[in-house]
Image (cartoon, rainbow, N blue to C red; front, side, top):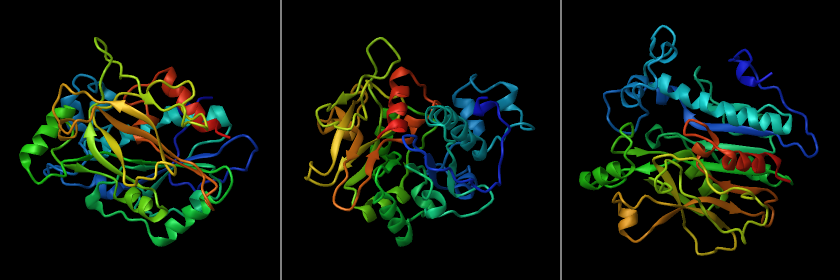
Length: 339
């Protein structure tokens, strides 16, 4: 029976999955404080998620069914919009479970009930592939403790492990309101404020683990001319020795994706496997500087004591809120079955 047709559970302890040779155990860790995000003042324009009412207004009439618009059934504040994320991750969870035979738990750094779960052996002990979705707004001050970084370092010393980091976009870093307005009109999403900075937690992990990457901007991908399909990735297949992108031509469209900028000149330790063409019909400081693509998918092969792989890909690649096709599902399968 499909997981989406199963009874929903909450406030239960995680049941550890047994190691099964050749069948990866995939886990998701969301770096936010749910209370801090859901409790943001809607009168504040910047650095918060949308309310469900705002989503309904901007996406009208997509969410006007009673399952979305009835306040007796669905929360109309920020909490309701956050639920859209949880629902959108279900297809990936189901796909990975069907592929590996293992359920895919979703952990939150601080959950609905205010229970804090740092990255420790409770999350890591039964995981082979860990996805960390950097969806915490910077102002909520989520930082990885030294113990968490050490726990991840030990996790990556285990053969066959894989850490996927997904720091989200970084919109409106400039103090100049005119520059922020240019960025806003570049991505074209009325739900994104003029400043929306994400990823403090994942940034702290990257510093601690020596991952030479910084998430920048919120860039609108180009489309295939005359269609609503995202333009194909520019893939460095000669560098993809593990086959992460075998059979993959594109990810899914999202209006504001981060550029994973390298902060090192050492291209042997980290490889840019895929770049995404940008919609250059809409001005942006990044394209004004001559850039036509942004770094969308990166790989750090095992090195020295680190036996595991480190990947970087935005969290939107792992949900269906923004669409999915055979290419994206092939990417999911590559991740779930990596050996």
